[in-house]
Structures are given as C-alpha cells and as structure tokens.
Length: 143
Image 1 (spheres, helix red, strand yellow):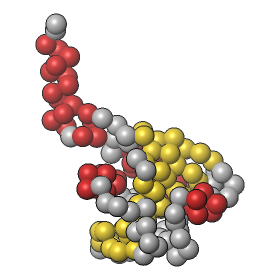
Image 2: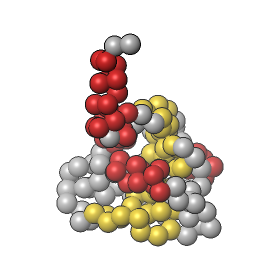
Image 3: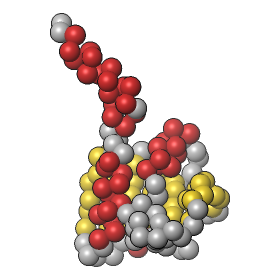
C-alpha cells in the first residue's frame, strides 16, 4: 500500500475536522435573497456541504423545524438534527455539533450587519441557543 494516501489523510486530520469530514447542511431560502448565498459560501468555506433549496415562503419550514416568532431571519438550515436560523457563524455551528446540546438549534434573529453573509457593518449581535421548551439563551456574543 502506498504511503501517499495515508500522508494525505494525515494532512486532512491535521487541518481540522472540517477538512477531514464535511458535514451536509440543507438550507431553505428565498430565491431573491443574496445574503443567503453569501452565508452559504461562509459555511462552505468552513467545510460544510450545502444543499440550497429555493422556496417562496420559508415561514412554514421555520415553524416545522422549531423556530418560534422573534427568532427568525431570512434563511433556515438543518444539520444533524439541529435547526440553524439566519446568519450563524460557522464556528458556532461546529461548537453546537461538538457539544451536542439538547436544543432545537441556533439562531441569529434578524439580519445584523456584521454577521457572516451580511459583512457590511460593525453591529453587535448574539447567537441564541433555541431550547426545546421555547426559551432561548445566549450561546455566543459578537461585538
């Protein structure tokens, strides 16, 4: 057996989990929303494999996947049983998947100008952990 494949595997593992094993994420968004595509590029660059679904009305999907009013943004994603709502940074998705919280998922409500995919301002924002009981708590802060 050649040592080259083992060497390549070692390089991928050294580069981190995103390089060694990409995880599939399904995203629902409006076909006219440009920031959704920019966010998808952000998470792809972090090693996730993205399947984009254009839908005219994302709200029914949000409700089905546990996003309550007040936690919404422009796109909704699903990965490993978790819902990712809005412009959540890839590193927080990785943290959620590593820590395996008993939760619906993560949300960045609204469209903060400094969040990934927006990248046009310096607006502070929070990533919220959406609990199964309908509550939410701060998971990460960005200033």
